Length: 262
Image (cartoon, rainbow, N blue to C red; front, side, top):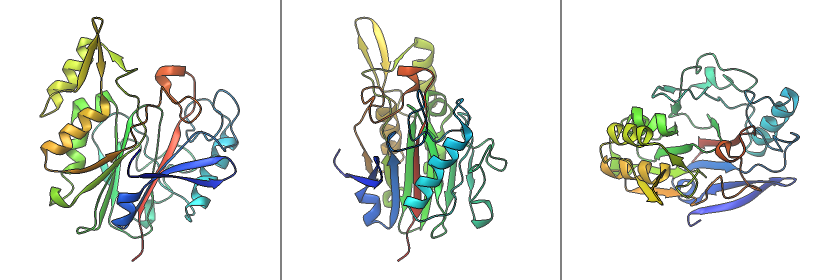
């Protein structure tokens, strides 16, 4: 887990913070599942209103994360497995924080150049990538499952930046190829939507997709070289992360990023 520091945010809650993005002037933090208010099977720092959890508990969990990072609210897109990445200003900071998003109901990403405007996300296997350029002073959030990769959402996020060489990327815990078995149709769809194909493994006649490996290859192809990921598989780490593929009915762990003052 080079490049990330595990930090406590109160109680039993922890976040993995990208040290490289922090040095570049950006917070990029990926929350673990413990230290929240939700009961099983959403235990306990579930960040999604859409999985059947008690709304009061989810609100308390989001409030805990916001307080820990010194913000009042953070916007949260709906994440519909598409390619829409929308701008965020102070007027839309609360969209999706206390319920279903309106402005960001069709978004799978957000971007901003404003100091102190946070970007929020949740996932339970998919790629959450924070892209940042200290030169352009732009921060972007991109969510990508296999459908997003097939649709080109990683390229869409990278295209927000004028100079790929200046961009740094932090990718949070994601289901790994050790657990993510897919059919030929999924692998072919991802390969068709990627300029470098799909990163896959075949074991005993079964095909496994490497979401992070594919995302990293796409970023490298468009000229982004500074990419760090935690190396953690959500399906492997049941005590620390939610995994839809592993558990079915479960919560979603949160992530938050913002441009820091200075």
